Length: 251
Image (cartoon, rainbow, N blue to C red; front, top):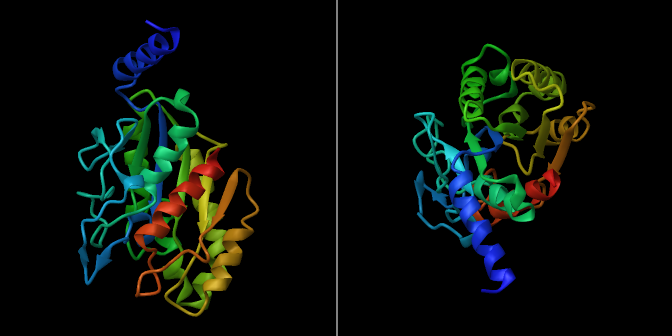
């Protein structure tokens, strides 16, 4: 048996036996675009899963029962998201992170998005915030380490100027509280700058996102990615590309 083949078999055996629990955990939160609306037309998902979003034994998700399972689309399936779930950026992101560095072991995704939420709905003590903390802490019990939060939210804050103007301060407070409650002062934040909005103040929110001014926030700009016919949600193809861009930003 060749040395190359032997090392490959040993690596596979190591992956199969020692990596059953995710060691590197990523939280996903925000509103409908992080939940994923790719392929959703008239409140019905078309069921089409692109190759980049297919199941991979190296990528697991924390389901609604707070149990780990192989990640499959729709990633937010079974969770109370307030919207029909379609293709999102999570699985391409997880595959991209693992593919670049297999030493990261199994990737654990913790989907926690809630459609139609403003940033004020994610302040400490709210239902969305408490759910995120609960799911993050449950994921952590597996002995893994929370590497980053993937955050895609803000479309609902583009309707009122008061919300857009307050976005930066509210986001910064959200991150401050989250890091404190997770006892992770240097938690990496992968923030998506809006590709779209449902009101007239999209650019104001985008500027707040591009210039948060707090440490360890890496911004991935979604502007220019293809949108569904509703001009708000990313298409399946765009969600895959966003996931890849987020993986690049984490690396």
